[in-house]
Picture 1 (cartoon, rainbow, N blue to C red):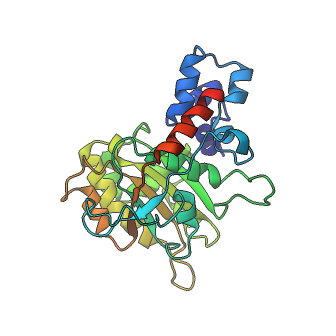
Picture 2: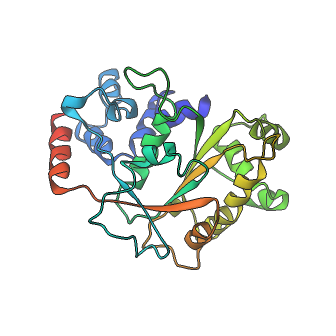
Length: 277
């Protein structure tokens, strides 16, 4: 609960300010309003309202289509064809990829972080007219490089991803063994979000090596994977072929996807709505 309230900006003024940083439109509006954290501005500028589907007359979030990558990230396929999915949330819901984790390999500024923030939101918030969140089967965990980590102790114990989860969620009183017991429960499925470009190269390699192992580690009584998944974002232009991107692309646990750019008319409508908002 602590982690979710922090990430959604519900717990404090500081958490609310931090939640705006990954969404350029909200951060720009906040800057334009003099960076005042008063109740009226908090009510107007927040992730839940930004991603809301009930603002059809003034949509401030436009989904970015995703397209599967085959082989080399530079050979994405026919950009003139229809994208595979309307957005990251639809991809995560799809039956075709329901057992896969997702590697987003789009370039800088393509919308990877906003798409991930929308998916995080869709794990928690019930859309109007619905009875459950769109991705309500998952408990989201946002893991970033701002969380202090004792890498030496993690390396000695091997369970790197589990310890990153403990750190990110502020579960200081829960032991590694206690978390592992929770992760084996068939009804608890985590959806982990990583922006690996925010980590140092050595740390990127460690996470890329250990994340597939984590996803294989937890099985149910029928010896089937519990269903934990991850969304990992890389800027495709900054990761070498031999680096962590390639490690994840070669992993059976991951499918790689690129993001389509918005069409000019959509981009114009988006900017007009942001100004009116």
